[in-house]
Image (cartoon, rainbow, N blue to C red; front, side, top):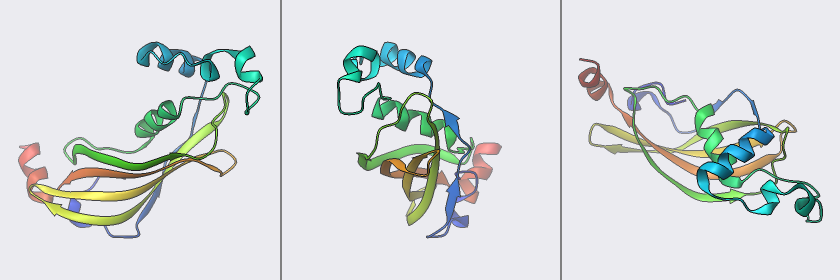
Length: 150
């Protein structure tokens, strides 16, 4: 999605990523990295008694994995500009395959480029959304891309 100069984006434009399956190893590594060992994610017996009947992926793990699914070309992406209105609307289980969909909502000119404001929807293989958010990326304009490549 973020692989072209700011001037080439249009409101309404949409993009979809490839899929990636969430594994038990992902939960363990994310817990170790973040320090979040909450039993809903890490204790099979405890989670079995809860509302989902099994362990679920950390919401922040799902959101983090999605950033790796989104195309972000060096020299085009200047910075992560922000994320708003994040909602974890359904559980992601071990073995679910997630993908990211983006739709451009707004474009704001800034020095060196502009902010591409998108609606991020992370879905699992069933097509059901699991995360909704507004994602903003600072993207270079053509002039800045030439400057960065020289």
